[in-house]
Image (tube, rainbow, N blue to C red; front, side):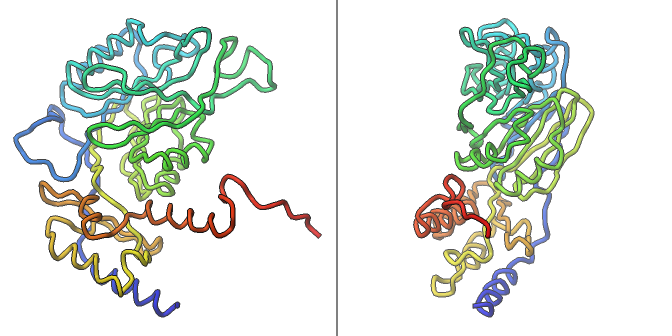
Length: 353
């Protein structure tokens, strides 16, 4: 078995000779994110993150930045003010929605959101038409400790509540999820985002999130981009590699949502009796390259280099699967054999002797 595994790895990495290319780059100012007259390669999404501004000045600042072109603009946590809840119809929100419509861009606007007599710490996704496309309610707000206090915790004396799920929203460039500040301390939320199909997670926060963000990106195989009130922006590749660490109050990055990770030891893809699928895919599609090899993780990343190439569609065409699919199937098979889902219901507790 060990010899077979080594043979499989040798066969796969023999194909990996393409130099590693940069997955993300900072676009030049005044370059529109829409039609530039050139055919797009991959599925690029241009992201702007903006640090805290005076609430009454935020829409004007976002308007100026959006004029240079963007697909997604991310604002910091509770930018209208901490413990200053507003509704979705508030003039501050309407002004941000108007900017989204004017520049045909998505905007993530995190607010303390008044919903009847309850307050949620919410990230609100506004679409390119200026309409609400989705709301994420912070699953792990900072609650009073000891319980019952009204002078600490992020809600203070407000009737605040935690969210109940980690929804993922479909956009025209891919599936995105959101997380907020203290959420960064709870791995179960980030796993739920993977389960729900996120390809990109936007993290608005009072603090940077630190190295945990890279760990979540690597473990769950999605991009992570942060936006803090203090003006920090970190961006992590779906491999966990840090792409950007900027602390200037404003950051720009372009990510390719078409890039896909596969496993070198995935028998479904690389079992000899199933044919040399990867070799065939690369030979018949010169617009696809292996962008990065990760021999210690036994992963490789496929990337489009020509217009019109869709890597996920080609994997389907050649009856291959990405890393996330492979691991999900392994979890499902293991749960069936052991009789329970390991992450949700463990076996009966064993008493130590």
